[in-house]
Length: 61
Ligand SMILES: [Zn+2]
Image (cartoon, rainbow, N blue to C red; front, side, top):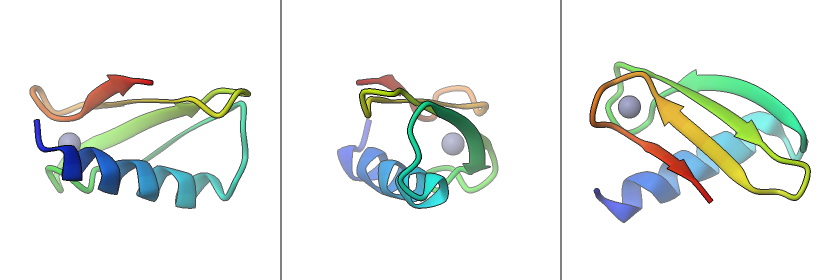
């Protein structure tokens, strides 16, 4: 997996959430361009995300 894709996705998520924590949301996936990227930002700032495209972004950290 391309780390740059993760970095771009993380930035897009943080921008979409506008600094909020303890929230869930979704954005159009910046990596595959066709999928929907579902995300959750934990209260401690950790970001979990998963794209609905098989083989695309999915991570917890
Ligand atoms: Zn994707």
